Image 1: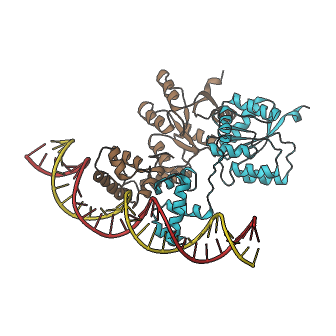
Image 2: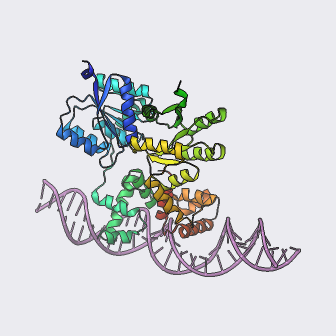
Image 3: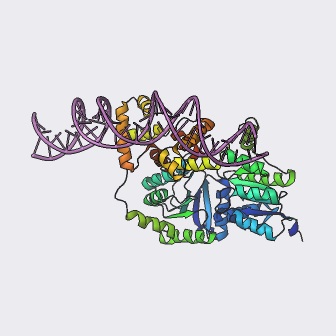
Length: 216
Length: 216
DNA sequence: ACAAAAAAGGGTATATTTCCCCTTGTCGAA
DNA sequence: TTCGACAAGGGGAAATATACCCTTTTTTGT
């Protein structure tokens, strides 16, 4: 009986239509079987805490999910199941996310518009050789090591201020909302302008949205 | 020979992994076959212009695609192939998009996290009865007819102004950029504040991003 | 106890917002 | 044809809000 020789794969994706279809695609490759499917990181982690994962050869992890997203899940895996091989799947090619997934231990990062052929190759490659990077991802990694000296870190109060700055409140109103002097707020503003290399509140709003500090 | 009795479906989706997997899922339902797959609206329309579509029973149309997106494709279909039955597929539940797809003739709108069972039901329902609306969509339609009196329409110049307002330029700079008097710009600003019920430039920026006038 | 942050203040120059009025051109109705 | 309504473009001036200096007081961590 040869069934047990198949590679065992787990899919974590909230798009049921996708994950269930993907299971069929993977089956059609012949050498693999999907042993579990989960619709977000939370239920996946719950499963891992109840069961051991020794027999799992590969996890296909969606990045954008409700409840617990791919990034948070990856962080948990890094600490708790560092040996689990993961390929991240996503529709977006946001450099920041990709880098974070990789540095948290993802062995590959595929966009969902990848062809099934490449997909199959990536699966094989990760299981056999341990990793698979597309040109897109390698490019980003190189790009990153060449400019990863200045990382901007924002303090909690600054984040709260930024969120308020992304409303129609005046600085004075923000100050009273945060129970601080307008002058303190002015200090936050000035240091942020400096740090983020911007010159106006508009720039701050654009920065906040781009970096997902606020949502629109 | 009974093969020709199967319902014929076309998939239009840029996520190859998804569309190819979905084809397998649809095949597994038994009564359907996927006769074509396209990766964006452009190549789909090119196909329709070369071939007649009389034998196509259903189109599954992704909303977010490069080159030509689902909405533009739907608009073309409305004018050129109004009898083609279309179910829109999307990851986002943006009310505006959903309403537009429906008013342009989509017979159903499904989120990609729909279960395969509902998906199958929707396909059957659209082919047999002509439409399928989930509660989400029906709710939006009701919501819409109840409040579709005041629609905001922006003029071309106003849109250009808004785009500039979403940068760190001052109004004076925007004026010279647009070859207008600062006073005219001020007029645009004021009428927009009025029309959009906002009070500050920050509000304008947030509006522009929310309504996809500018991208971040 | 001491240096480093965090919080607050003073002052000033621009930028932004608000309000009310003027000109010009277009276009349809009287 | 002429009149009036209406939209686009422009103006003056005043009140606030922002942005940028530079200094002082309070807290805080070690």
